[in-house]
Length: 391
Image (cartoon, rainbow, N blue to C red):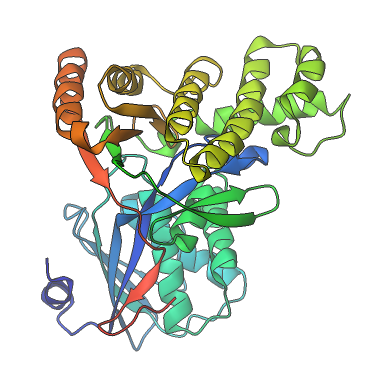
């Protein structure tokens, strides 16, 4: 699709710039990000495109090709409060609201045309993608002194304070900081990070979408975070730690009885073991032990199902069907769960049969079809230019 042409059709004048922010998939390290642990996401080549022109007044106009039924959303930069009628547009509005709240100067309004290639509600971070896209557009057009890490942190605050989801930093960080063919090992406690080249040799990443629509606000996301915080509070009576993932499994096992409540103990156990799994998985991948990496993915899913209880029948069906296929090295849910997507590492020679067999089994069990994507790892948010990439 020609985004500049569509921009002209909708807004009646020529666009100035085009931008892109990716979606992300987390290979391993789920529900560790707000527990001070490690995550291992990568940016994807699917994401959100933004075509933009500055205005001469203080009006913000937004249109999404993905939500034509919402139509044009228009508001003033002076009035950026959350409005349920504005639906998806609350995410970019929230970014500008947060920027103004924190003292950044937004000189003029904007006309913005949005087109996303991330399936809505799939758990590949469409919300973080549009947040980081909006923040980068403002940073670029208004010459804001805002580095990419700070930009990611600002977008997390939007999610927490404006949207009302107590999410961690992983999604926004991966969308902002991604690099082609690299995953990011991120310590969410310190924001120390390093890139790890993804060498899957004769295998690829396959994402399967349950097509069960949900958003973080519709899930038990905030409830799980509260449970982890309560488990930590009880542990802190005996052990001086600031986050669950600061503990080794041995330390956790020694203090687990003090938690008392079984559900809280299992939530904490998942965070601690998932953090250790993530570090082991990255080491295995970097030493070309792909099979070991896959087994750790499988263990991650089992923990998310039994201890954290965030999978659900749709995700469990996809993952268990994937485990049964020839050529599957590993498979797990990715993202917040309760629907969304699974991520699998599959031998290239077996991808066609994997999609056919898992797809048929899923539709028979669930009653509707899943969608499959063989994904590539791309770079983080950037301005699209004919001659160079600007970050």
